Amino acid sequence: MIKVMVMSFLSFIRSHIQGIPGDGRCLFRSVVHGACLRTGKPSPTQSLEKELADELRANVVNEFIKRQTDSEWYLDGDFDTYITHMRIGKYLCNLAAKKSYDTHEERNGAK
Image (cartoon, rainbow, N blue to C red; front, side):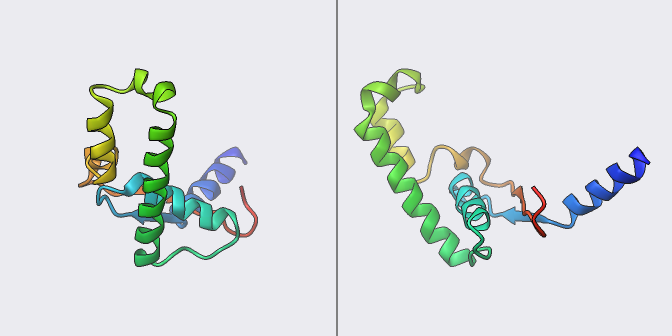
């Protein structure tokens, strides 16, 4: 019985995987994608996802700047360099820009 349940669950997960392009904004794209699904909206188009991801990135950068004294202590290297790289997409997702990560879509009320 347990084996059947596990196999059913794995089958469900495999059928609901959504790729996120590894384009230097993958973290922000995946957050945007998940937020749309979480609020009951359909998956965004690639262009809308990109636009919203860039907007989210800008908001994160502005928040880092606003809270510099709270955040700079845990960054590797210079704060201004980090902010510059974040603005142009050279930091977080660029570390894995050639790899596509998956997010899991919830369907039929499953969580």
